Image (cartoon, rainbow, N blue to C red; front, top):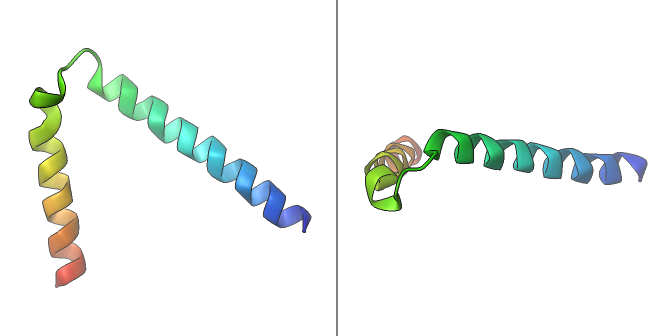
Length: 51
């Protein structure tokens, strides 16, 4: 059971690191400026999963 608890803590740490990295990459941009990048990534993910 200790492993499950540790895994959850690691997941939260990873999630926080990813969120912090995304904030740093966005910087002071408005959502309307980076929405094209996000939509492109969503499209690529869809195509990757589909085919």
